[in-house]
Length: 473
Image 1 (cartoon, one colour):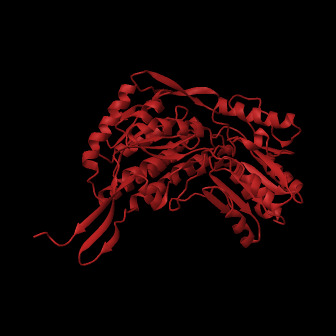
Image 2: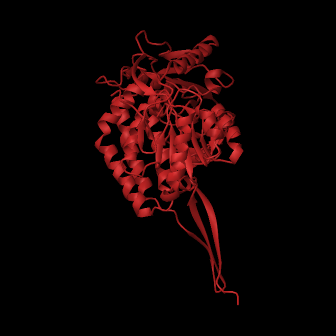
């Protein structure tokens, strides 16, 4: 379990800067060591990817499709081991980790079957004009700690399918499952097509400024995304930035509590609330405010909080101490301003980074718990009296990743959803993401999209082929 190596140019290598601890959030103690790479090794990985690209870009659709399906076969075959590793480094319950791996299998197979169409712009007796798509070159993938395995798959598989070569840099908090992922991918592609470097600090800026990296796909915080964007200007790197979100949901008046409350709870507390597109602010009409809050609190009290590898656990720890402390500070700030904590609201007195699912009422816009992205197991429930006012307040955030509207009147719900300032607007659901549907944010939640044909094309550059049919005499 502790034999982890980086992969550069087809070879597994130790880190030139030594190694660092990987913490199990259920215990707060180290359970493994990860290699700490050097900037020289990053340069080696980029060079390897650049050299491999000279041939890989000419590989056929059929070849890439076959290789990606073989990767998916291995991921499926080794899913149980991969899921356990995800639990140990990230903290989520085993069933959710298994869903993360199997979802990655689905995404890989979808990527394998994608085709890049040639668009016929014009064809007549005199000329033919076609729009082609070509791979970019070396793509750097920078991934976060909340869904370490699946987000790496989201970045890497379409990049490979489009004909690029990849250098992966996972979060230092959850690097191990991505190391295993890259090891599996490397079995099925030529050396240098996939590479990975790991380390605690210093790589982000080096990747963003590297002259031989052609694109960065980054999932993480808005401030870090802004830093990447500034630093990437040197060679005008292409960017896909999926950044923070403070997703609002509006429950329309008259919506039956029992019909939607379970789905709302799951959308808010998915992965212990540590999901960019999770529901993070819930606006409920004052006529149903108490009923919704109490129903949510009742569900929260039923959750079994514990180590994700323990049988019966359905709610794991916060992934790291810094995030746990932020969650606690936001709840205490709300409590100091008169908020009511219906359930939870205190760190559990046990080893690890445990904070129970927490429902908070008596809060409103302008307070930190509502205005900031908590990215943890807390849901503020906010009362409103007028739908237009709720919409205005939902849109007041400078983030715009996703949002949702809940109600039995679908025409009204769709109309309100259409007014949300978000990259995705859901009706009677939230955080529903599929491989065939483009996903991306607006405002400070980033730009560019992932998934679907639009997501695949983000890994390409266009070339217009303009053919004059008459040969000059």
